[in-house]
Length: 384
Image 1 (cartoon, rainbow, N blue to C red):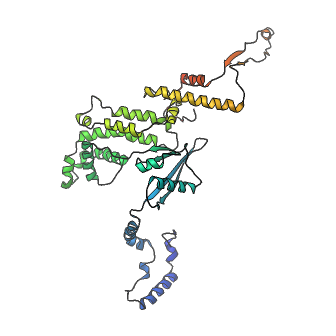
Image 2 (tube, rainbow, N blue to C red):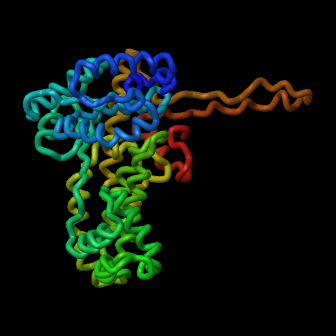
Image 3 (tube, helix red, strand yellow):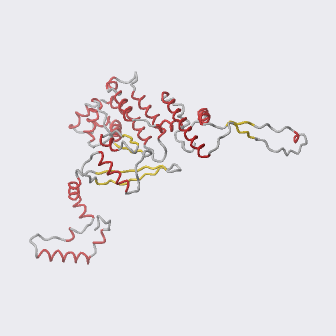
């Protein structure tokens, strides 16, 4: 009554209500072999809740453990480029098996209850399990999210020693923050930890910890950059992906311990899971400060070809819709009737008509590429 319906405790704390409840319990006690029960121990209040919360938690934990759930979230960009976020729900997965067909049917049925359906223009973000790949291989565009840990022996051993001393579970972002905070207080730990953890502290290579935190910092920055809620991020995918690949190339000045970690495996993993779509190329080209692809010159030609193709297809569609052909030249007269008070000025020759070519998809893109405009990182690319 109070916990489930969010009623105030005062609703059931009145003196008359207490007397009524106590009378009912007293009456039942005379016909029962159980010990006496005080109604004040049962009526919900901050005291009774605090005394029973652990027991209630364990009961609910037993009831809910191993029950599969399906979480659905939706992100939608409106016509005026506003990003809207919706949590559709965490829904009990009550289908008999978790086969690809059943997973897709379950998701489709849940989306249908909101009047939504998947199609080729909708991106579905899921993990890399085979059943998820199979479930969303048709009638949508699936984007894979990788959440596996980097399994390098030295780095993993260092992480495990730190984790034993910090003692909390974490994923990548939390792992990086844990290591970074641990590094900040490293020099102070020897005087405050007990002997149980001294062996773990002694096994931690501080120089390797510093280099590892420096190396991982850019990954954390990339996660933040691509998790922007209010601004578009598609144009960032190719540049930051290449930035990570370049970052994984070991430098001459890197320590031997860092070189032993063999980050080429990380590069291969980024290439494997970071699959680029046509939209990534076009959106990157349309950003004035990224259009020359200096971070990844090998991708520039593909981006230009895709942009040409998109412009041509849109131009053909627009021409077919209007049903008329455009003239190759447009004569634009920028002159105005001369109304000067000076007599001779009114006799001057009129400025000639200025021929201006009609913009074709090719010339339009060429003109854009020749523009000398730069945007700052915090500028809104959509306003450009």
